[in-house]
Length: 182
Image (cartoon, rainbow, N blue to C red; front, side, top):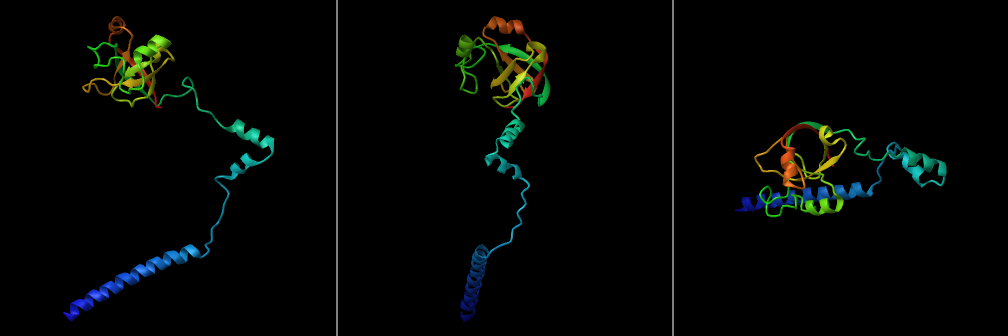
């Protein structure tokens, strides 16, 4: 019995002493001064922003680049896609034909107000992705706002049309799709 209690006491003493050493090492390193080399490399130009010299400020403002427009941007990927068309019929969609998969947009209201149809449905691109079809529409930008049936995978898409007659007239086309991520 004495041996068991002695082993237990030794183990507790060991655990307490290790804990004290770890805690003391943290306190000692946090209170002692440490040497650090300061090299102004990364943020060296930041001090020019807060100076009173107007010439330096103008130079910095001119050198800041802006985001490119869609016409200037290079596509991230080009896909040869099979495109069909759909309209807002309950037979072609679900019970809410004018509301696409992103739920923040009403296709029918937008078409009535703006007269623009720029929505496509695909399963292989994230919602909000911008695409162009240069062979069909030139520089017109479409946005992925809807999804297709799960059986359609990579390289398939639907362009939204305001009427069923326009969708049928569009037919099936194999076109080049330029993809620009958000």
